[in-house]
Length: 436
Image 1 (spheres, rainbow, N blue to C red):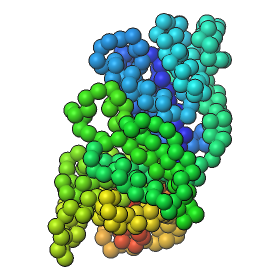
Image 2 (cartoon, one colour):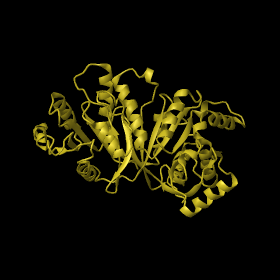
Image 3 (cartoon, helix red, strand yellow):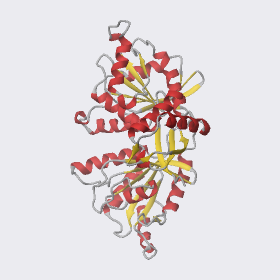
Image 4 (tube, helix red, strand yellow):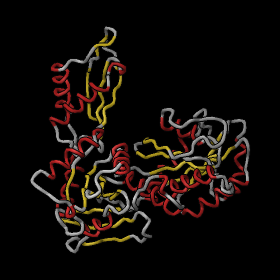
């Protein structure tokens, strides 16, 4: 299940990125004293008082600017607001209230989301400056100094408390995002999966270009299928409505438990298909590559093997892929999809015991000793699986610099050979530990 999303918004140069970096614990956003630096949304997973969430940093909102760049930044911020559970509205306590702050406040009120007003750049000598911000009509302002880290805890306390008010209805369904290029057969596949054998529980209304959530049950298990608009190349996205639909498709991937990557096998895997699949991989989502329109392919006994070899060649960056060859039009093999969905979700949530993992890594290091660099050799003292979805492993080593990419890949392959993580990415991180 995706973490609740906290969006950090406000006009340019109010300290949003400084706050984001402070909470994320590492420098992710570029922080410069000039507007327009953070153009796209940036995400970081974090935790506060035992509650996990995803923080999203956005570019500064200039409501009245007609400049192309500012319009694009505003679109990105609006998508973040639309998908967030809680919004942190940043204003500048040093500069005071501006007309742009009122404009952004009006937009946030229309969102109907919990909004926490954060007055940044405040120190103990200027706390009286926060009172004018009550006029925004967004409740009590919280005084912080993102640069010095003061007041941040109070803001996060309020933010995580707001999760309870927006998330009272627990949703334990498996969320399936159906993504791909236009005309790959996504909607036909969704319609096939929502056939008469499954009872539709909820159908949330939306336009054909929205990401539409439909809840249903199958074999007593709850699912939510998210039908998305086709994702075209950036140069082919021609209007604002389509821009929003593409962004919603990417947001659907972020909140999904598993993705169905629909490919028109009559056309073959294209560069755009590979980019979409790569995005899902980068987001750490388990996935199933659905090779659709199989009924249009002339076949012999080696056809599927030939397609699999081509997929393996084109998707070297995710050699763990799992595929199925179907026809949404005729229903061929579509009955296998939900079982395969359950399978890859189970793989993504599988945990290896610490003892078994350490035994495996120790044996791998003995069989294939790490190469040495400048007379130093990598030592792996201890390993542990720290999370699932995606399965994430931490290696405690003498020096992180000694873990070469090729040896990390060897260790990942060793794990995969001994445990079935097909259909899901895995992550390996390292932490340095003294061997004394």
